Structures are given as C-alpha cells and as structure tokens.
Length: 305
Image (cartoon, rainbow, N blue to C red; front, side, top):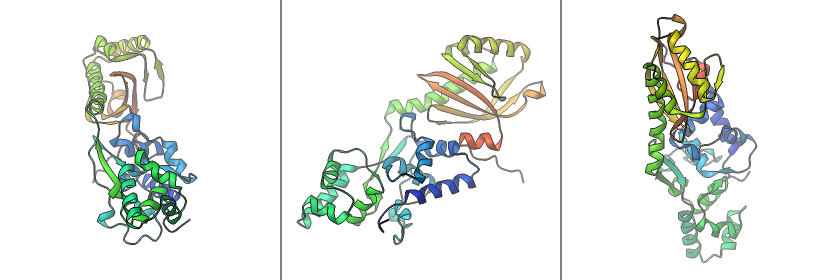
C-alpha cells in the first residue's frame, strides 16, 4: 500500500467498531448511514460489509460512512499529518441534503496545476501513480469517483478531499417522498386507532403484507383487511400511541406504545411501514427490544437512573 492510499479495510474496521459499541446489526448501522438519503441512493449493507475485501469503493457512499463516523477522509490514510484538523472535516448536512464529490471541479484543479507546471496528462498520471491520463481527463465529464483513488488525486494537489465535496439539496419531489413515508405511516396508524377499515384499505397496496410481533405474516390486501376486522372485534379499545417517527430508505420507523384492556397487547412497540407509490406495502409490528432497535437502526432506549 502506498503511503497516500486510503484504507478501505481500516474504514470497515472503524464502522464495525462503532456498530458493535452501539449494539447495532449491520442492517441497523446501514439504516443510520442512509438516514440522509432517499431510497434510490441508499447504500446496501452488503456494500459496507464488502469493504473488508474490496479494492475500490464508490466515493459518495464512502462520504456518508465517514459522516456517520465523524471522521475525515485523511484519517484513513496511514501517516497523514494532522488528519483530524478542522480543514479536513466534512460539512454537516440536513436530512434533505447529501454529500457528493464534484469530479469536474477536481479535473479543473488537476488541469490548472498541470498547466502551471507545463506537464502533459501522461506525466501527471505517472506522478500520481495507479491512474491513466484517460482516467484523469474523463473526470471533466464524470459524476462519480472512487476510493482510494480520489485520495491519490487530492494528495497530488496537496488539498483536502473536502475541497472537492459539495452539498446537494434533494429536489422537492424527493423531499416530499420522505414526508410522504412518514405521513402514510401516521395516517395508517390513525385508521387503526379509530378502527377504520375503509381508511386502511385506501392506504394499502394490493399486495400489502402484515407481520406481527411473532413474525406471522398475512399477505394480500383482502386477507389483511379480514384480519383487522377480526382484531377490532376482539380488541375494540386497542390503540397505538406514537412517540416518534423517522424515515429511511422506503420505510418509516415508528416508536411508541400500545394501549389495550388486554394486558397482552399493552406496552412499548416498534412499527415499520414500507411505502411504495404513496401506499403501504407492509406494516410490521415488533417488540421494543434492544435487538429490534439495533436492526432498525434506532438508538438504544435510555436507561433509567
């Protein structure tokens, strides 16, 4: 490994260490890493765990892993001086923003230094090592870069990697999509609380699935409605109290508690709602346990002093 190389294996180790310390599964850690992005940009758990053996990783995904770790890109380059200095730190972003590399800006900086030193692109490629002149010139038209290569380019420029990172605000329709997921989940729960079968039906996809806390699955809109009808007849005073709702990928995660005269149905609970095209494709009930919180990417419940 050259001194300027970014270590994907060390990144994996840092992610795994934080995941274990937080009591998260890889799925739960991935939920947290993806908290800023909509489903079409979401990182898969397999992409993260694959860092153990990969030689190259997609740059924008790595940026969000680094953001989750609160680490600089330079901190994963062995021997990089003052790698945690503020000038290397990634910017904080809102839930409606993402970080992206700006390859054309990187190309412009490389070109300016090349011209200042009267070098050909081939000469620049030889100095950097591990790249071709074509790879460098293609940055002008590219939308993506990879690790560890991007760190070799910024090292040659003697500039922090964050210089070539931009904040992208999601377009309005994607912002609305995040709000839609939460809204649909909350409306579905309101229908449960008022025993509104017509309302539930209006919010279900035809292939809607319900999964209870024992992992029993009912599939199909009609069958689910029949199950809800029987449930409402058996437990007419059942209702869910929502304490918080977050969105990740195509889902809304609801935290709260259930109330009912039947003690078997009372207590803290978690619900995950998968939303597709503005309708609910899955409603899943889970007990509020550390394992389930870890799987959903939720923080552990605070301990009572």
